[in-house]
Length: 174
Ligand SMILES: CC(C)(COP(=O)(O)OP(=O)(O)OC[C@H]1O[C@@H](n2cnc3c(N)ncnc32)[C@H](O)[C@@H]1OP(=O)(O)O)[C@@H](O)C(=O)NCCC(=O)NCCS
Image 1: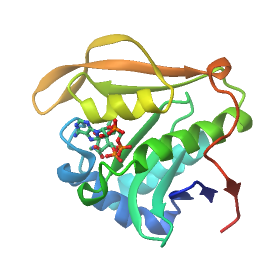
Image 2 (image 1 turned 180 degrees about the horizontal axis):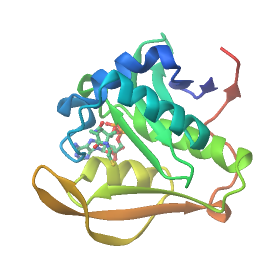
Image 3 (image 1 turned 90 degrees about the horizontal axis):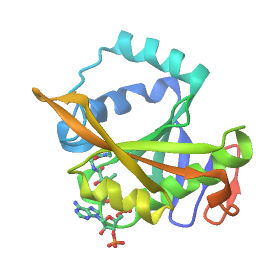
């Protein structure tokens, strides 16, 4: 588990997939800026096995252990995240992104971590900027969501822009 000040990140295990599926399948949780995917249990397990070889999903947990969201990184060091609506605007996602950055740079041989977000997703853009990411540009018509091709912004943080872990306070086996 990756421990921060107000949020911990706990690796999603195979037995946690039903909750992750519930969130992924709920447009209220992963939002209007993501495709409305409806994965079956089998698809999700296949995808989990594939993802485990390349990246990782974490639950965002509050210090009382309640699960409030999820964040993942892929093999190409791209990250993505979402929170349950009742826990938004409390700084949790910004902290989770900082924790993932603090975890990835020391543990992976990568010079950059990136994220893509819909040009209209103001909340996500703010999270990335507050976590030290810089805007690289617009990727035009790069994601098909709800019947239309949407423009997204590409953000990144480079290894030299990241100083040292400052949010990730502890890594434990729990
Ligand atoms: C994007 C999302 C993860 C942000 O999570 P969060 O925990 O609410 O973000 P934070 O609390 O860390 O907020 C960071 C900043 O964004 C601002 N912000 C949050 N939601 C906002 C909104 N809807 N509109 C404008 N600004 C917003 C916060 O006020 C804060 O800025 P401040 O510190 O200057 O006040 C959350 O809104 C969400 O789950 N959205 C649906 C899924 C999604 O869009 N995921 C990203 C796909 S790329």
